Image (tube, rainbow, N blue to C red):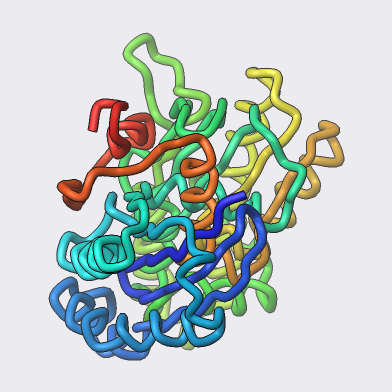
Length: 351
């Protein structure tokens, strides 16, 4: 029963949490969205500087809430990959320093593994094997969760991630950044059947299609051409609500179809959803409907654990620590690291 202080700084949220196995004792998230909105997206150097300005206060808040009793902390964890290198370094350096000063085990955690563990926070009885549909601004994957640290990627996007597609379409429609929440809000007021948009398929050499892989670049281009066509026809203002609803429904339908097919083909009766797009109402509706139709158990983490947070990192770290996994203090950060290589982060496992 480990208790871990965890830090997450992989992108544009500075987050610190104290987690006891699957129970969140304290969690704080300092979002940088207002800072990056003026640029229309995340600027890596700006993100790093913001982490430097907020990390100490976030750690202090966590320790003050917990009572600053280091005897009750069993380990210190931080996201080490994948992510923005400068941002990752801030959190990793802070975690290593705390581990050294207080002589605690250190754990470097894979960001995507954290998103998998977000479902454990609201599903205390959840156990592998199950399928995880991980959908965020940088990742869209179908991951076969076999055990702690043991994963197989069954499907992934071949181009834009789902969240990235939301941001690009929102920019096209002059809706600002981030695109996911505003498109979701407008879609509720629009008609999802107003415009027929293509569901991306990934071709195989034999002429067939990869059943679990996704592609969103073509969909993004189709929305661009639709907007150009409507403008040429003199339609003003654009039916933004209908465009948003049609786009969101196409993405949600595509993701739900692939996740359900994958789960059924592999004999898995549970699908956990992780990542920022897990908060999308369209995706939730499609997956919940499919769950009823195919007798599947679909699990969404609470909205506060869909976006990047340290509680999910702490939950993953607790499981690893309980199994005797720790990371060397020589561990560095990596902008890219496959989820299948998680065990390389721990001593004695190829680190």
